[in-house]
Amino acid sequence: MAGCIRPRGDEIPTSATPYWFTQPVDHFGGNNGTWQQQYLVNATFYRPGGPIYISTPGELAVTTKYVDRMHVTQLARKTNALVVAVEHRFFGQSNPMPDLSGSSLQYLTIENTLEDFASFVRAVKSQPASMFPITVLNNAKVVFFGGSYSGNVAAWMRAKYPRLVQGSWASSAILYGRLENYQFDQSYGRHLQALGCAERFSQAVEAVDEVLTSGTAAEVSALQTTLGVPSLTPQDTAGLLAGLSIIYSLAPVLTSFDYVAANVCSFFNSSSKAPIDSYAGVIKAAIAQMGMNEQALIQMGDTNYGLDNYALGQTDRSWYYMGCTWFGNWQVAPSPSSGLSRYRSQLVDLSYFQPNCQRKFGSSVEVPVDVADYNSKWFNILKGASNIYYTSGSLDVWRDSTVLTSTGNLLPSSTSSPMFTIDGATHVQDLSADQPSDLASVIKARTIGDALVAKWVK
Image 1: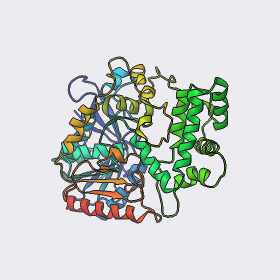
Image 2: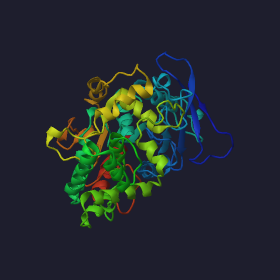
Image 3: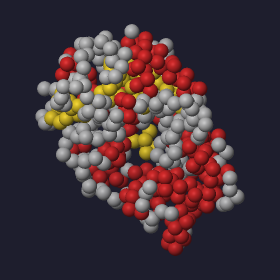
Image 4: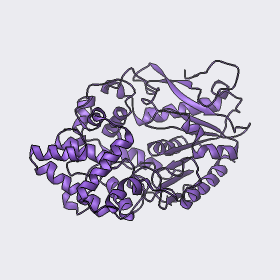
């Protein structure tokens, strides 16, 4: 039976105190084992009769940030709510199995994930005394919050369990699966274009490609030295450069600062250097910013690295499995025949990603992932669902995987499930912590969302 292991002590613990909830490895009978799911609680603003706001960090480990320093914390202050962050299975300390092998990760399914959260909510509603360090009334109204992939969880929870979840705020939720997600870079290109450096950035990528695809071994080695990256295969070098060049793409745009302007376009717009030399400045600055040494760069770029390392705690490994078996969304360059500008090497195509699905997790993983089946089940479930608030930034690199794409909404906006595009914003800015330099559009998105949530929990 599911249940909570509470910390010892008479005083109300801080939000850093971990709690643990017992879950089955497989809710559908394939494995009768159990495991402990970690969650954190901020009870600072709760008053009897108040709602419960639940989120998950999704593919990240749970930390106090998710209950103390997000917009939901400010909303809890206004609405006397309890704030709870629940860790996702196979991330952080919440591990159903002893390793991350393919045989273990078979239990990392959407069905199991959602039933984890549903079981948690059932316990919260029926036996709150066993779940929290303060007295919480039975049958409290629950609202889910989430951004990026955790926004998927928030939307799905309302759509699948409307009797348990009163409503959901899904920010930048990457709900629509695409096998080849070349749209990711096109969204990044719109941000670069707004800052005036898209053309030179693309020219730099083309210059790099010319060497990686047609250069001699000596020329490839010289290019790697120029860019400050280790000696890898041309394709692995291309993948590493793609990852390093977009590290600021998810950073917020503020009234006083734009991270992409400061850390990417500044190298192109304030220099008469050749585009490839400006690109080298971007790559080297990114490496320095992240404090990466050669070994860390090899680990990031070498597709042969860690294939048989099944140790727990590898966020990227669990996330890769989800791409292989859930929704794809491989970030690739557009086809050369598309006529679209490229912001990553043409070598970063499906052949860069897909072979590792079976190399990492075994031959039982089907390649390619059935994205059509995923969308049929997990996108279509959202049709007709009420009390879901969808948001996305106009400069969000994930925008075309959300319901608010750059070419139009994939679902109809309605009074019960409204949508709002946050002009000039990037990824999940509305659910990030409030700050004085927030864009007016971000503030407006929060105002709309706050009013909706207040209505749902009234």
